[in-house]
Length: 104
Image (tube, rainbow, N blue to C red; front, side):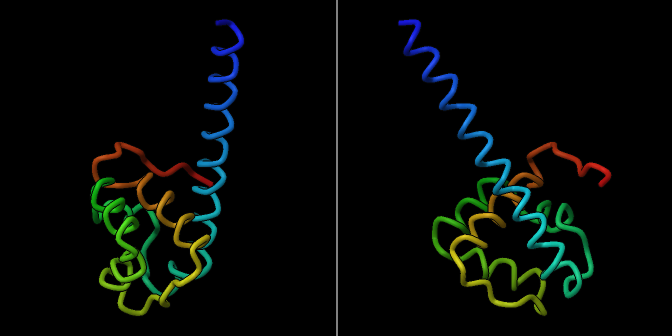
């Protein structure tokens, strides 16, 4: 039983680290490619939808189009890795997330 609990604990730690890395990569992508053409920070973009709405866009392969609707000058994002990273980043600042940006 103790081994199972330890395995679950370490598995959870690894998963959360992976999601955090994805969120950070999404932040970097947003800052580099979208912020200049959109004119607002990623937390502002994230708050345009709830976490569930961002998930629906991502699950239905509509995330790039949803971003384009909010920021018409945004490039069309086609790389799955970039879309995944952006999804994690934007959903972390969703209107119902309660998260606020940190000062970097």
